[in-house]
Amino acid sequence: MRIGVIILPEDPWPVAAAKWRRAERLGFDHAWTYDHLAWRALRDSPWYGAVPTLAAAAAVTSTIRVGTLVASPEFRQPVPFARELVTVDEIAGGRFTLGFGAGSGGWDATALGHPPWSPGERAWLVLAGEPRYPELRSWAAIFPSLAFTKAEGSDLRVLDPSLRD
Image (tube, rainbow, N blue to C red):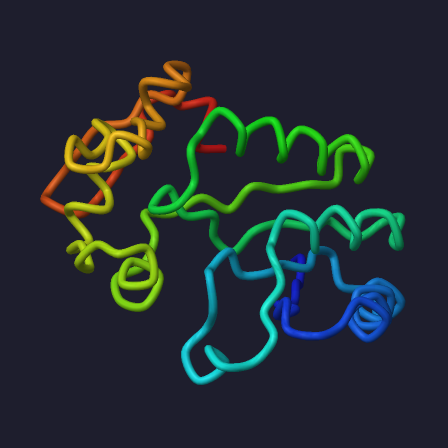
């Protein structure tokens, strides 16, 4: 069994760095951070970006896997985001794991100036992009090796068996 921990990106780096190091010292196998613009009751508090946080965490640790819980296509253009993640994985020496989801309704969407999308709309964004917001290109179009299918409204299934393992 592998056990992980979530470390919110809410602390100034000296405090956050100590948390990432402590998670590693305590023997956690992986540590994750949220990829949101803010988080619920912490909206009016400091909140740092997931990618820089993970890059810094990778630089101050050596064994623990680091990752997003979860990256949101709702506000991420896939090409530059992929480049950022490749950089994090390089800094981490291959210890980066991408947790990828359909985003969340609510505050992230509202902060970006569009109405919250349903789970089905967010899932479809991954497949087809959003014509009302052309900057949100389809992740499936950018990464055709990620074969997705839309099933039962909001459920995305990965078709390629090698990607399910």
